Length: 460
Image (tube, rainbow, N blue to C red):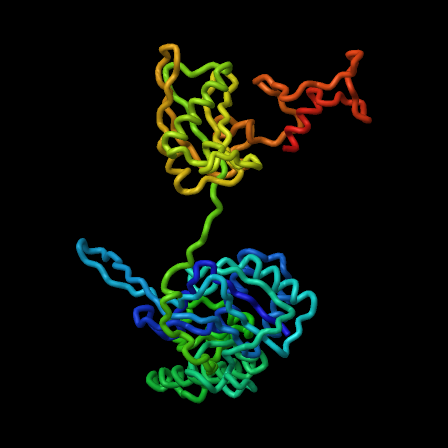
């Protein structure tokens, strides 16, 4: 069994059936196997030319049987675009019709009777991994090869041994012709082209008074008659659509139309599918402020500036728990769930130039409103006010580093050694014996000594 899982990450499949105009509003559903083959060929040529041609040939030949589909609930939608003409003031309205699908519900193409050798399976897996879109360029897709799948298909070719196959609407989709049949078809087309060319030359010879029975084609003329016929089914998959139309083909060489039966109400209007899925984003845990003013505070004013910033956030948030550090009953928040205010001298000139506000539980919408409201901080001693600019909300890894010009701060960087610019104050008295000698742990460290208390603080 071989199955291909297609997840349309924008919830849309844009594809117009062969022979239909885009403004007809027709959609291709299910996706045609011919389109899959063409996409794999294009992906191989442009992104994975390292895969041997013989492997790609054998892979596509193994998948020429019509696949079955497991189609999710879907609906038809469209957008309208007014395309400008060359003449000023004139435009044409263009319909872009597409199939709307839930992002979380993929499309499955399944070949129940097919088994791929290891080299073909690896090649298909590599091609699907770099398949950026399927259909028109708006149909962004994530594709995956499944060698095991226990689900049920609901869209099969007519006549398939499937109870659901005769229950819905019949549609025609394009698929690849079996490769051995293409050889017979090409031979017939070649004979017709040669005979037609001989017929035209005989008419021309008779008009000039020459014997038409003596007309023969040279080898070069014979090859010219076959120039529009791809050499084999694999070469037919490489033909450009514009070239096919110029040559007058109603359908691409090597293709055939197959009737599928869609499940009942396969494209029924659904209000839940008419809107894009709402994605919830994680709340940011870091807010970065840049300081500006005629006189920036010195590094020794770190604690004072942090307290001033905290008071401003308390004022703008009406004393929210995240900035107060206490709940509505006045109880202290456990687990360091409150916000930390961390002024910093990121450029190393001895003056504070940034403030980082960090909260591990994240900033909700009211907290973000309070953060965006703080624009000015008062300074004591007659110094001018500080102006603040909220430069970003995000995660620590987005701002950690040592590139000051890139907006990074060492405060949020990774390091094995840290140097504190402010004093580390001990919260407990280091333990001593009556003799005055320090009490020691088994490992020789001082009980409640500076190192012991620092380790405990880091754990907490």
